[in-house]
Amino acid sequence: MATSEIHAGICGFTTVVHAEMDGDECVLTINSDCPDIAKLGENLTRVDPMREITWRGQPPQVLEAAPKYCAHAACPVPSGIIKAVEVAAGLALPADATITVRRD
Image 1: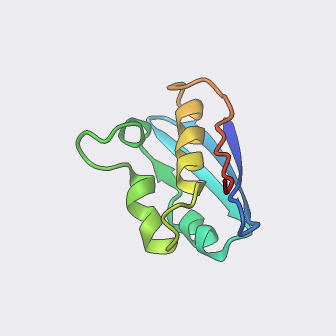
Image 2 (image 1 turned 60 degrees about the vertical axis):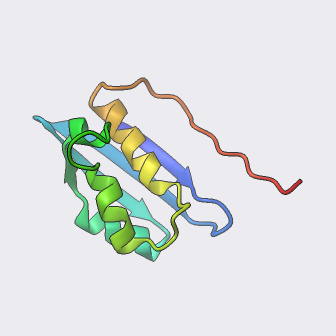
Image 3 (image 1 turned 90 degrees about the horizontal axis):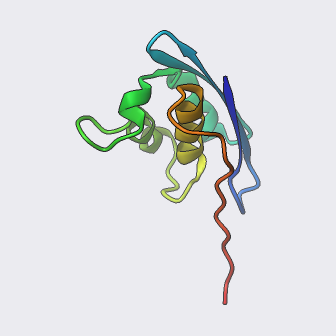
C-alpha cells in the first residue's frame, strides 16, 4: 500500500490518497477537503498502473478523469494520485515531490 498526502496550495485543501494493489489493478481511496476532488475520488476507484505511468497508448485514467471534476489545471492532486499508484505497484520508490512557488 502507498499513501500520498497532497497539500494543494493557496486553496488550502488537503487530499489523502491510499493506493493498494489488487491483482493487476490498483484500488484507490481518495479523501479530500475539496468537493471537486472528493467527487473525483468517488468515481476513480480502480486504475491500471501500467496505463498510469505512460503517455503511450491510452492516456492515464487519472488525467483523463481529472478535468471532469476539477476545473483547476494546475491542481497537483492528479500527479499525487499517480505517484501513489506508482509506489503501490512497485514501479517507483516512495519519495516526496515538491513544487515551490514564489513571486520574485
